[in-house]
Image (cartoon, rainbow, N blue to C red; front, top):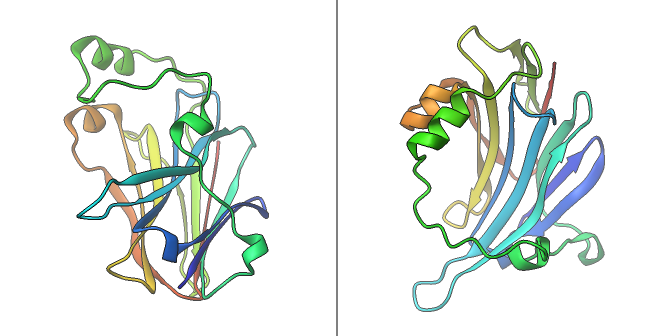
Amino acid sequence: MAVMHVTVDGATVAAVDLAQVDMFAVHLYGDLTSDHVAALSCHGGTYPEDGPSTFRLWVEKGLLEHAPLVTVTLADSAPAAQLTQGKTIAEMFPDQPPCERTDFTPTPAEEDELRNRPRVREGFSWALRTSTGIDLSGRNGADDDSFAFSVLWTQDRPTQARVNASTTNVENVIRRAGGTKLYNGMLNVGDSVTFDCGD
């Protein structure tokens, strides 16, 4: 089974044996109101029809570097010693109480808080490159205040992973509306994609 390999500025943060999960996702998100340039999340799990599901986190952190370079590779294999193991939410955040909230629709107060957050930067740049020759870059548009980059692998496509990048704004987030698509594509085994962002 293939392996998903994730690096930040060349350093491995996750190397996941996809035979052990039903889904694995890499998300990189950033906006104009956060102190960190971007936040990286790598997570996955198993979801059997006849048993309990499992959810694991490999990475959940803000990236403070000026322009973090995140590379995701869908590799054919990796030595067992290089594979990394995910943690439960309780293991990743032992000092935090369990979240009992089930409805994450923003309340009116939360919507106001989102709209009124002060900006800490004027804009952001982004670039996306793939091993197959795609080379895109740009800056946020006048109505954009956040970006999102993701790679999603699911067991129904064992040799491929979906890649998406987009920009959006707070109003779209509140309304759960789509933003501006920057890229939609696929990684095949042996391919990689790199995304970087900055001010």
